[in-house]
Length: 227
Image (cartoon, rainbow, N blue to C red; front, side, top):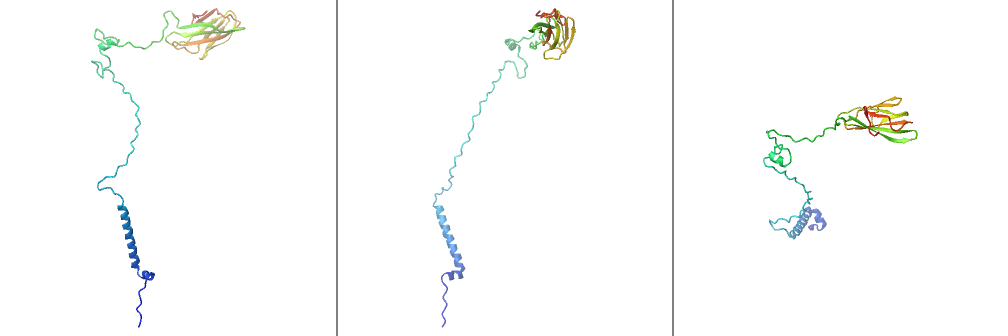
């Protein structure tokens, strides 16, 4: 009689029956899932409907703004509207401004414009002053300083006469040079540029072997000061 073969046991049974491996894997996954759910439920969850605490939000730091000065409104005078261009007669009288003309015509405010200086009656338009700037052995340096006292730009002519001596040179400080005409007893200098109203200019000259005080010094025919 033949023996009935026994079913294989151990690893041989597992290898011949793959569903056993699949079932074991499913069981292991179920166990791990149960363990994970238990660990999650072990925490203290918030009750239903409760909101999670809000995290504190740092408040923004606002730098203090610089104080701004608001100009105070100008005082409103009675009877003066925002479009009024002047003060009423009562306010103008209190502020020292001229009052209205008795005839009814307006009187304007006096203007503060300055008119150019004018030469007084009988005063020459160009004035000159003579002086000795430097004296040395054998000669000296003289000067005629001029001022335009008229209301318009002007040219000028200087005439100088000495007892003897010789002119070395003559020049004007800081402006274009003019024309020199020499003679036996002196020289004449004609300006090369006009002098503006109220302006000044200086003519200097070098003389040799001459007396310091000239016999004649004139600007546009008018005698110089300082002699």
